[in-house]
Image 1 (tube, rainbow, N blue to C red):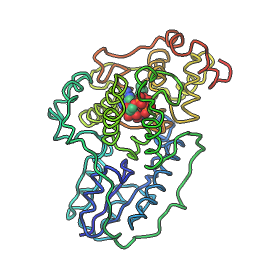
Image 2 (image 1 turned 90 degrees about the vertical axis):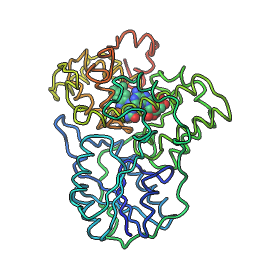
Image 3 (image 1 turned 180 degrees about the vertical axis):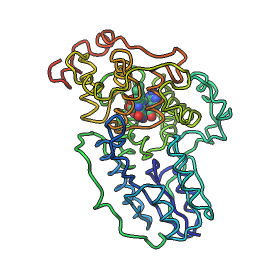
Length: 420
Ligand SMILES: Cc1cc2nc3c(=O)[nH]c(=O)nc-3n(C[C@H](O)[C@H](O)[C@H](O)COP(=O)(O)OP(=O)(O)OC[C@H]3O[C@@H](n4cnc5c(N)ncnc54)[C@H](O)[C@@H]3O)c2cc1C
């Protein structure tokens, strides 16, 4: 049996149940679609895929291809809309099975359904690779997802650790089915320049984690340092690899548990797992909410602010806009990364100081973040706007208070604005 494995946000060999499932056939083709629409400007003027995530994704693809080569396989990279490209590959090969990772959000799920409908005689399977838990392991039905993170966490916090055990890399893979065409990497675009400090690829993610956890042991102070505005070791910085699927959430959880067993366990080591549960909550929240994750009133019916994208862009740079927000804009657009605290500050300022519709900010983040994750991004923006999973109905950050707590000496603003 020939199987096509369509890779999306699962760019790894380690702990990859979709790859293991796809490898059960006698022949395998691993394919990745670069969707041209990623680079087309959306309603707010930004394309979904900005320079930082693209540079990161590209390196992840090259690295994955090299890793597959060591197992006699390769990654076929195509520049095509998945709804057209995936059925075309399956039909050209006469494949009997299509495997992919379960998508996190509404549009991607609809895309999968279109692909499935185009392949009525092919077995099409979605496998969970993005989350810590499988849906079947959740102690509630998805349509009864707790409406706040706290309730979710309490219900899930003591998982059956055996069910979370990550899978090892496969030792072997089936032979590659006859290739369809030459790999298209030379024809692919490199839009924009990126100065992101993050390097894509599973091996670089593993090296990064090794350094943060085992060599520097920075996890031991995570809870104290995590709110720093701009400090490389203040938080784990694993988000780009998690988002691309170059590192699995289960592997990260397992490494935290191993560290606790072999080195030390304290409030900080627990807190990194706690934050991973936030990510987990937003993944299920996105699946539960579907289209509503992207609607302005969320599911609570509130009205949010101006949808004027031109004015929003002007406001972000305006000298009258708070220097902390202007500094954050420069850091985000230059590097693709902001600390969680800066993301919260900026989101709050966009919504409550600039009076903009939160979706403008979410689209801006989507374009520039190297670690953009649809569920975490839209879920967090909704949360701060008070139209999502926030029991307090929104989070307003007092900018002067944030400055006095996190940038009293002005060093963050000096670094990114040169002069605050
Ligand atoms: C407005 C806004 C937008 C955001 N957009 C994204 C996004 O597109 N992609 C993304 O990965 N994270 C997003 N976050 C969450 C969080 O800011 C980042 O995950 C975190 O800053 C990444 O840095 P880190 O890996 O050092 O995190 P750490 O503090 O080391 O946390 C470890 C991991 O836990 C998860 N995590 C931590 N905090 C959150 C959170 N609040 N929500 C969801 N997951 C969390 C992430 O996977 C993170 O990598 C957003 C937060 C806000 C407030």
